[in-house]
Image (cartoon, rainbow, N blue to C red; front, top):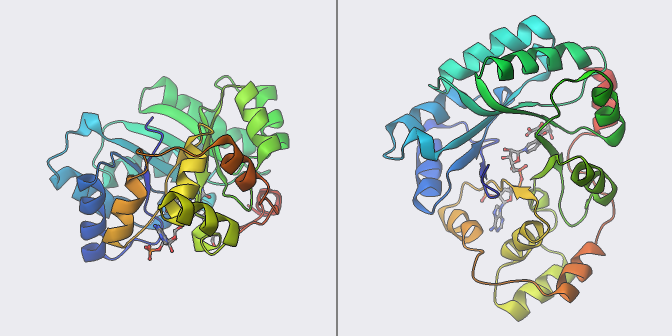
Length: 262
Ligand SMILES: NC(=O)C1=CN([C@@H]2O[C@H](COP(=O)(O)OP(=O)(O)OC[C@H]3O[C@@H](n4cnc5c(N)ncnc54)[C@H](OP(=O)(O)O)[C@@H]3O)[C@@H](O)[C@H]2O)C=CC1
Ligand SMILES: O=C(O)C(=O)[C@@H](O)[C@H](O)C(=O)CO
């Protein structure tokens, strides 16, 4: 799985999607993160199919939405996702949010899709340590990935340590905190000193801790900027200074509340 992919949440307008995805391909992105919930699997599938990039060079992730959890609905909605994405095999399928009610049945369907080689890898999103511990009690396949909210204001170090010990890859959603961290004075100081943008500094901070990133942007200049982060490194001091910014601030829903609600 590429460590640096592109997120397409909120990109639903066809002409915008065409511009954005083609720009992302042009600057080197090959990994795309969508979800049933984003209502753009069909759009993404068509644009990628029409692009000159070979299917084998792409890495496509989608997620089973909350309303489609459970054994049968996971299987049938996965089939629809595959059709919309115009694929015969998906690269990575994720459970979008943990659900107490559907917990093991959804994963049982995931394991079947994996055994049937309809997906190359299966994983979860927004699983806290307790959810992963619960999954371990009955799962035959360990999740390959846990996609979690992660940025300088929500560093998630205890959860990431747990993932590392179990060889589960940590993937950061909202790696830029949906813009919330971009005005941070400490980050701006580091960026100014290194003559990089604040977004580039944050993405670099993720990369240097082996976290997978999927920044989203609909702005061509920013799409290029977010891809251009391989000609500099953050020092240990700068990494440590960014680590200290954590305030456990979520921009999205609380997984523990979602677990009880879905
Ligand atoms: N599993 C899950 O539960 C979740 C998964 N995700 C995934 O993670 C992806 C990324 O997260 P997302 O919530 O989109 O948030 P991001 O942290 O990627 O931030 C996106 C926002 O930052 C702005 N932005 C992007 N690049 C720059 C830049 N260089 N300078 C200034 N502003 C910038 C964008 O503006 P603009 O577009 O106007 O340029 C947009 O408003 C999603 O697209 C989705 O694929 C997201 C949420 C939950
Ligand atoms: O984008 C996603 O994948 C999400 O799950 C989030 O957008 C989340 O549902 C949210 O923050 C809604 O406001």
